[in-house]
Length: 279
Image 1 (spheres, rainbow, N blue to C red):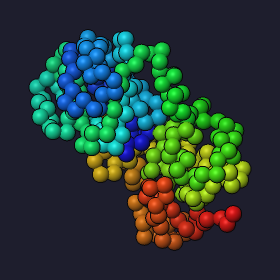
Image 2: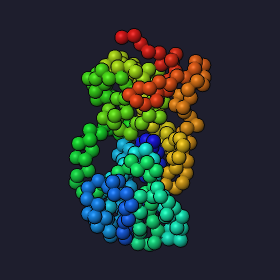
Image 3: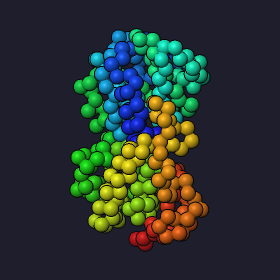
Image 4: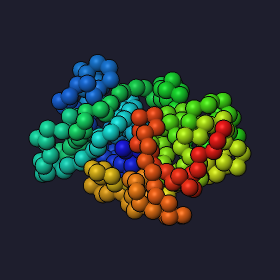
């Protein structure tokens, strides 16, 4: 958490709140969040105008006058916007970066675990930045080509669940949505990628598109602490069919949902609808 749908929701909210704002100064209270030289980061942001807030995978992109601020929220990162009169949260010990705007408002970066990262790059470095990370395509009809997807699946014997999580096959999928995607596609999470048949690949590709689209439309899933930058909770958790449902009845067949550890991640599935095939 947060995964692509939650980051998309944060992006939409930030565009409503800070678009066109000019940064006066930046205060950093936990320097390890910043990638690169801290003072250079602070100096370069002074006077920058926020032209747009975009997203790539799970990364937020603040498009500024001269720079792109890449923000990765990791486990618990979130943004809080405060008007000039609202000083609540300013002294919160989990606020680690504060952007003071010229109109008196502030944008606060709040991160309980301090795992988030921020980095400034030039606009012409953006494509290379994500290419170097091996980030896969966005899970959209326009970008997510099924033939390329099938080819990459056929080149690895790794289980499908951790492959969905590593961001190289397709961007933005985390633990919650991987479980939901595999359930809808009827695929056991431990199935080797190169053992998936064409029908399974087609079902998996379609399931990725549908689950992510529906989750984005619902504002993401609120599990524990997630809120978008407008303070709103997501609603997709109401549609979750297996994630967090260990021991409950499968909505399709009534079998009990199982939970196992796979690649160090809790993994939920229906042992009947997602039967493990002997290979």
